[in-house]
Length: 522
Ligand code: NAD
Image 1 (cartoon, rainbow, N blue to C red):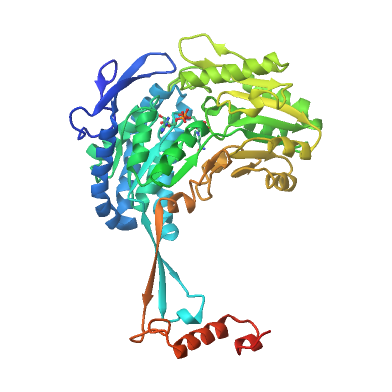
Image 2 (image 1 turned 135 degrees about the vertical axis):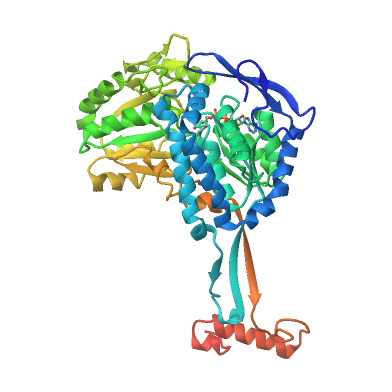
């Protein structure tokens, strides 16, 4: 792939023909501001052609079966392991992440390939079902899970590989072909992996990406059979509305405003260290970042001092493998503006920054790791998704007040509770969100065994676990008659005698008392 100012078709295979490009966009390194690539936008026609091409190969891919498809995905796993440094270099260049944060991307993907490789047969293998009624005793009941032929994935910029390939892996394992539209801020790493699938791995032509902006995403929605969208709830609504035009099913992984509750009996060192990492990791640009913290009164002063101390020590800036730093850049130039607005709004309304509180002068888009206190729910920083290295901490009377505030949100993605194990678990079970961690943060994302998805305005549908692969499938029930007469009693002709027989048999099997079984009233 070319970089610098040269225009490049970053993703698709180039089979889209002349006139396929519809303008271009620039990609910058957020750590330096440097222009690193200019990418050609795929036109709606080019998107449709890419989808048609992989669609033509999907039946053969599906016919490979679970093992056959895993064979190819395992090769992708090995490629990711063998080319990790190259992948991390691109990740860092287009996102401005520190090396440690970038390294989560391939690590997660190789684990996920192994997970779905091992579990797919259990999750989407053919099911044999015993008929519930003796009237169906002659039938063999089977359920098979057949993929939506082409799955479209629209992904955001905060984890360019995890949130694109992390959904492509179960879709491919299920037998679907996949076309991904990555974020226009971070298109390069994904394009590199897709190119490797085609040219270095030699994988079947059932995985591709198209490059572009919102319009390109819309064209993908029009062309595919299922849409997996990860991004803001604002765009999620548009995607769902567009998908409604073609009755295309969607799964939406949207924003969050994750609460953390710290009970008075928590290990405050662990809670403060977890809050620092859970709030600042990936510069807070994680849908499941710790964004707001509620601390029971007796623990408040000590917790806040420990948290501010830990966050105040974090190193920030561009790094490499030899000299690691803790906190990287903000990937999207729009997002740093939102973070600044939330912090300024809080400070103007009486909040205090115990550490951080402002944008770092350039080059690069950096915001200081920030701990805010004296905040309340009238402030944007406690209400809207900040998606930056900022946490707001509130003192609460007791666990009930913490719960009330934690649940006072239009979002419900995930959350965490720190405290004595049983008490914390009891509180955790009442947090209104799709996943909750007890005495840990973010870790539910690595537990791919269990579903992860949003309640309320945080989304529709789940990734991970059984639902994370089943959602890419359509259910086909197969009802097989093992033996039967020339004519069933319920078929034509409708004579009095045959109708009576059917009624008496149905009654005999469905009534639960003798009188009704025998045709009498109860
Ligand atoms: P975004 O909604 O701005 O963009 C996401 C993707 O949608 C991009 O690829 C974009 O080009 C595309 N898009 C934009 N307009 C479109 C349209 N009209 N039709 C189709 N596609 C369109 O989100 P973002 O700023 O890239 O990402 C940040 C957001 O993602 C945050 O809200 C964050 O919480 C959320 N997120 C959620 C999860 C999750 O699993 N729930 C994970 C990561 C990020």
